[in-house]
Length: 153
Image (cartoon, rainbow, N blue to C red; front, side, top):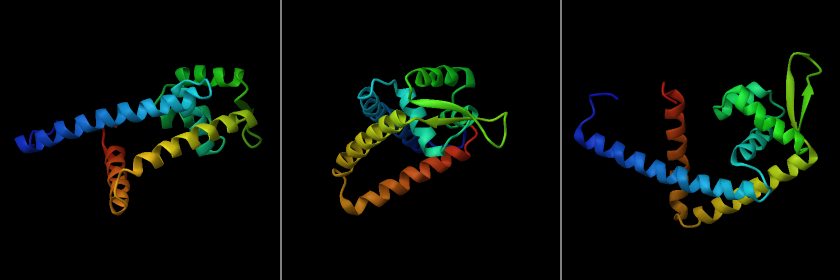
């Protein structure tokens, strides 16, 4: 940690950490509930989301985005393959590249979870004054950019 922080800055950082812990815990519970609607684990739900978002990515692509090692992700992917929610397909342009593709059922589950999350977020945002909603979005974006540029994230 940078020693140039004053006592006031340290108090701010402690407060931010506490808020993030609460935010992560509460949002994680919402996501877990969303995944459970389809009988999936939270990680499996994240995998479906990222495959859909990235558009037929490789195992490495998804592992990098989720911050998981390939072997851990591979086990989750195998479970989703066995459930008929995703397929592994060899790329037509590069035989060494295997794409992860949502099946029709996988897309249906991902849509169901995403719609549930949108409903949750809409309800949460309804408690924030309309004129402050852009500020919330901007602040979260700012935090994400700072995390991306940080050596620890």
